[in-house]
Length: 297
Length: 335
Image 1 (spheres, rainbow over the protein chains, first blue to last red):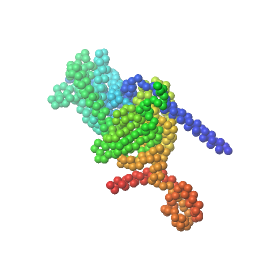
Image 2 (cartoon, rainbow over the protein chains, first blue to last red):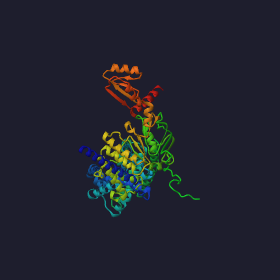
Image 3 (cartoon, helix red, strand yellow):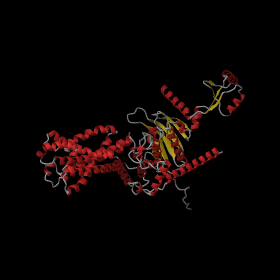
Image 4 (tube, rainbow over the protein chains, first blue to last red):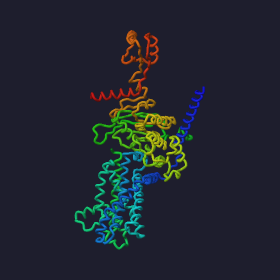
């Protein structure tokens, strides 16, 4: 008797839970929506915010982003400064940290864009690419999100530079640094879009990436000044995008400083034009190729 | 005279039609670049709204290719597809808005929390504007997410990274996420692959509930045939072609037969008696007779040999499936 009543009780509890579950499901499927005012803008903000959220959730990335530049500067330019610092006539550590900053903006945005390939293989881009969103909003959101991440890292590098590595400080320099940094981020992002449109997998892209990045470290004059090069290195250096980015950044940071003429290689205007033109070119070609390659497999 | 516009006589909007099947596929062909044969080779079918439709077939049969085309991520080589009243070729953005997908591989951002994943989805599908925090999102969204968390039993871990969730939980989260934007069709590409039996069972509980609401058509591919027994329609693909289609009942009765299993301590006597009665049988570990329905009782009444086993056997869809695929493979080899 008691067993019977217990089993009836279980059944009624179960059916109560079932109807409650149905109610919850109805709530999920029928909740009133609230359409955003501008769908493209909303997509753009959503994608960009995802990049920043991911970065903030991943402290190792943050630590890594700080340790690498410090290690490189101490390892490369520490010895250089003690041996050749006097001959150069200016502080090589300051030279290196400004180069490092340009590299960081460029590289981190580039790598941020490459995560679109990783996503395509792993998990999330399926969800992104299936959503009813503009491909252009997707790409620009990704670039801006990755740029914000790169800028956050850049702020930390700048602070470290000012505190420990002879980063030149002047008010106009720091004010102009923001827009120039953003431009360099966009250059990296645009280059990244071009890369993901050309390489279908993370694997092939990450094999090619060091080949494209490492020469730029040296030919772009990130750590070591590019003076009196033999003609072939000079030529290679002149076709390195990072050279123009790093030089543009230095022309801003070192403006009004006594060592400006020794450090900055070219007219800032030339640098600006080259960086803008390259960004536009990569962006247009990359976006067109990316949107097309997605569906034509 | 002007008639009032009511729901009945309002001109039909695309996507709201009820008579037209929700998915219509005609002569679909896909040939991948550098491939020698077509991955999908002239496939046609239609899916009525609100039904559970299952696409079956061995690995490499072309199921995922079909799903990729229907979900607009892959362009077809030829053929015509309409989903929710929209043409695939010209109106793919509208189609995207009207479908939900759960992929073979989980498509959650592992580094984000469950809520962030849901928020991202809601914002990408334009259900709500994006805000950088749960509390900043509209009240309707928060209610929806709280209901979702309660239904999944993850109210405690809603704000924990998805990578800490179990496989079954991730799948359920994906399915509910896919329902947020009220899709007309929910595509499930092998949703239960790699899940333990308990997770599979509870996942199907959710899917049954979703079906019961009657709003969502479910398009399913799976390798677990018992999941398909309750489907409204089944299509079996092999090497890019549809080799069988119908309800599970039709497939079973067309291809396999129900049978009666008998055994006796006196096997020789049973054998003799069956021969005398003129009933065909196969003798293996037990006697199997192609007898079903009322004939069973009729036969049992006439048997006098004492029996140790009486069992009726209804063939499963799995048996029918294996037979269809087996036949098709054989035909292909002969070619």
